Amino acid sequence: MAARSALYNVIERAVRKAARGLVHDFGEIENLQVSVKGPADFVSTADLQAERILKAELGKARPEFGFLMEEGGAVTGDGRHRWIVDPLDGTTNFLHGIPHFAISIAVEREGEIIAGVVYDPMRDEMFYAEKGFGAFVNDRRLRVSARQQLGDSVIGTGIPYRERGDHPEYLKLLAAVMATTAGVRRMGAASLDLAYVAAGRYDGFFEIGLSPWDIAAGMLLVREAGGYVSEIDGGRDVLKSGNVLAANDRLSAPLGKLLRNAGGKSA
Image (cartoon, rainbow, N blue to C red; front, side):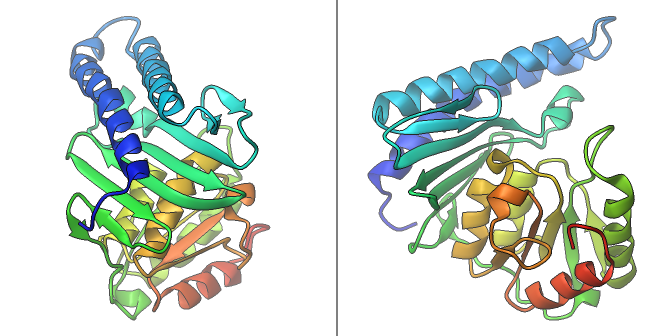
């Protein structure tokens, strides 16, 4: 990797400190699975503790920055910069002892994402990007895949759960993608899905109804790795709508057309 910036070093230190607690707590999950109460309360505590650590570490290093956090909400800063933080993306995986979850942190400056980190502590993969400087995982430069045909592609997605999201709308999109591509994967952590697009592991990704902390860092990873990110209907305000389409430069247009032709209010 190229020389790491001071901003990256701040984020990495905070993420690794929070991740140590998550990895320890994840080790307790298997035992809790067989208890009467179950692990849900334990996981909530782990999530909140990780967020407290991140807020303290990031706030100490950049006290002028504001925050937008999944659990803690918005905290006003200097009005120019803010951290967008998801301390545990993939909570349901964590809850069930599935080792696929991440910490996601993005830096927003005057409405633009300028840096982002998605860290998978179980694989020790630190995905990182700064605007204009490329995307990396650990010390390796990232590049989106080169596949050109939807029929050869593997697409990631996220399924709305329980009472959240519009299931009939989503199922129309999913059916179209399933019928056209080589495969669809639903792994349960949107930040890592986007990181996988940046790394060329997925050729594309789509989901509806996400929150800013789910996608802010991952969006920058994809763009800095040579891919495209937009709303499913082609709009650019992905953080506001939460409806995201990410793909390599060859498949962005045909995948977007496929989803829009499938119908649905978000397409």
